[in-house]
Length: 97
Image (cartoon, rainbow, N blue to C red; front, side, top):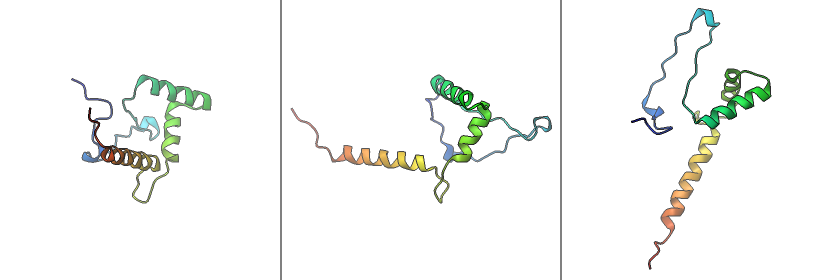
């Protein structure tokens, strides 16, 4: 059975540099599994920008804003929202009938 989307734990893995082929001008492959609608959105965004999907992904990564620990700011906002939701859930009294 396949793993659910996003189930790999990146914190348990070490970075392994990809093999660079001389005939690819220092470029390497970047792969990942995403839902089909996300793939279509990225493709359409790149096309509308007049650039390749690879260049589009490169630009997204380069523009990612990080905190002092290297964590993307958008992820910190998600974590904070998740924390607040869990805290809110814990503060609610159970309904009784």
